[in-house]
Length: 144
View 1: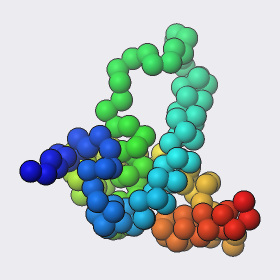
View 2: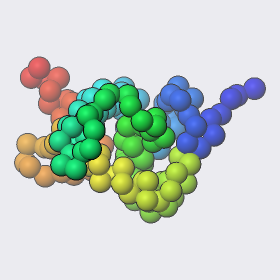
View 3: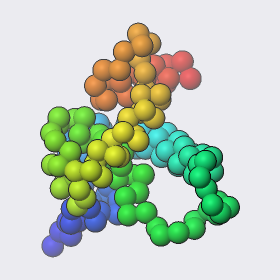
């Protein structure tokens, strides 16, 4: 019997086959892994910098303090890729992973600048996520 993850409850992408990953996010699993490898640390770095330099902070920043986040950086990236791939509303994307439309939209606005910064094509244009990511990875492999 196959154990499928409930919306928003999947812990890893191994629950999905390569075909489903490509269909959902528009990227081959190996390329998606490379995208996640690049984006997740940068998202965390930006979050930490935002918290450290918040002007109205009343107490010292302590790492791992407070309530654990419900929407992890992984989920934020996957929601953004799904939104860009399928061009559906944030309500649909949020429902797919078990969160609200507002959560999807907030994630989109947090992830998109990082995605653009990491995957800008040589022409300066940001095309589709898939073409930008694949193009940059192939470019880097050829000259790296």
